[in-house]
Amino acid sequence: MKYSSDIAFSEAVKSIQARKGSRLMYQRVEENGSWDTKFTPQIVNYISQQHSMFFGTSNSDNQPYIQHRGGPKGFLKVLDSTTLAFADYKGNKQFISQGNLSENNKAFIFLIDYANQTRVKLWGTARVIEGDDELTQKLMQFEQPYRARAEQVIVFSLKAFDINCPQHIPRKVDLEDIESLVAEQAQQIDLLKDKIKQLEFKYK
Image (cartoon, rainbow, N blue to C red; front, side, top):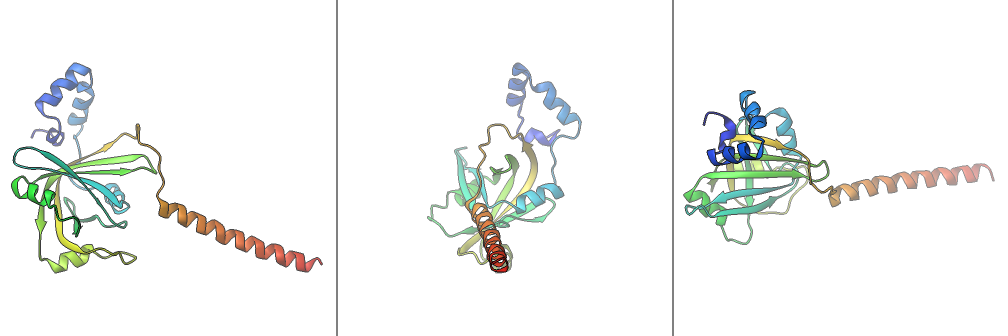
């Protein structure tokens, strides 16, 4: 690839961009360094805040497949400037992603933050690691215990990433964030009630 964005912008894609008027804009992106190929501090922080992602693979017949993966914040862990990993929890035992990766190691990760209306796309390759207890334990370390059984580990090697625009991302808030906010407000209300009682007693 001449540019890192060529991982997504094939000649067919560039031809359509030219026909529809966006090629010049993306050509400027290419000339200015194209997409990042290493995790930046900003993206590392973004990844650490995610508790949901979509993982794309395809088999040897080029049949694509997208699998949702989730967990507590921090379930996706950046190991170095081009590597992230996550514990693959025991589930329905279809093993489609693992089967695809055994034939075709190209992979894709899509991250979306509905509350802040941001999304990040990551292209790369991936492999499945079984039986590495040390790495598995590292990936299962969270602030609060998480009830899941790690069956194996998936290691993703970054080739390039792109930060998308916020257009058309619906604004949604996670239940745990709402619960935390409500609990905080309830605590403040209790404190105000106590102060009111104290004032009532004082001025009786």
